[in-house]
Image (tube, rainbow, N blue to C red; front, side, top):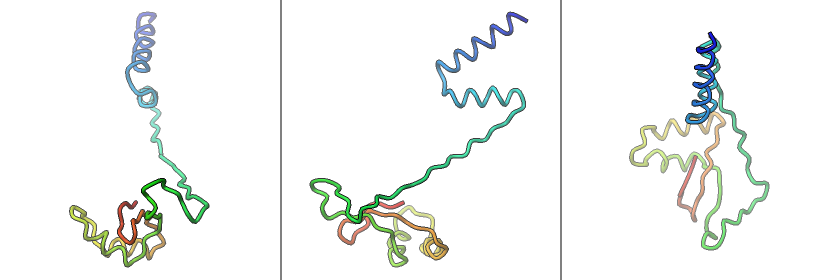
Length: 110
């Protein structure tokens, strides 16, 4: 019994040393019949200011929420498998699409 306990302690020690701690802990719990499924929660915050200073060289950039008219551009990006109508339906359902524009051109979006 003492040898197996020592082996378990060594295994736990090595896992914490060489592997991700949370993954190892969840794996140990699973061995005892306790399955935990983590759920990732993140609250996004937007700046309270209307104007954001991106720094020198980025004066023409602005952060905006995209409108339905912008979904035509998003829907036609090469390699996208989601059609324009799906994006429009999401906006109509109340979802938001945050983007960075340079002038009127979309340069990044979520």
